[in-house]
Length: 345
Image (cartoon, rainbow, N blue to C red):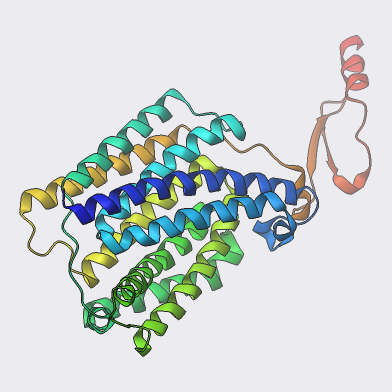
């Protein structure tokens, strides 16, 4: 393994530990906040006043900083798949702290993630040597990547404006799809900023270029959007489901974006590329196993803040005819009395 890749690998490991922990801490903060007001999934922002949520946010920021530095030293096709380790951390912590039980097959899924990540690390390509932010800008404005960017933004807008209000709380793919698509653009921008900072610290000032500030603006916009919809996903669905699906989609889109922009696989042998793909498929298999072993979410009191239709209950009366009760109809007839009447007839 190349020395720069080794540095990126270590930083990615540290990042995964912090980010995996942040999922659990933020979820506990969201649960506390939802007990006192509208949930984040229905537009509530009470979690901003919850200290535990901010602890989780700080933990995530530390992890993202480590991840940010890792992208400077290693290609995205190496750093991003290592995010599978954060799935293992969050799944184990959710088992103990959130009582979201990790089944035996879930443990197998964790092992598959570790094996797949190891294969990816061993066959990762070497990081390109870029000498200025202008070179990165040329890569970002090539026709293929511009087409990817336009497509990603268009799909994200459709999900945000049309699908999110209609089925965001029933279809997990909506919120996570937004996070993943926007996240791939975040990684490309963050990598450009990281390289610019590294070159500046080495004595070649990159802050004088307009392109550096454009990358910065794009990164901030994407990060805010990503965090907003990730909060919605975490507040609506089980953590053991959100983490693996988010990882799988985010990693897939990021690898695709990086392959288009930075041409990571250029110069690699067919066997190396095949090995990386096998490693990635192994990791995806692990996340699928984790997903299949999840337990359903229990209903929460905070569901009272969500729009629901009147409850309907059915009871069998003494004459055998069904009696339907709506929520506003008052209390139902005595079920015990009905059974006694039937018994003694």
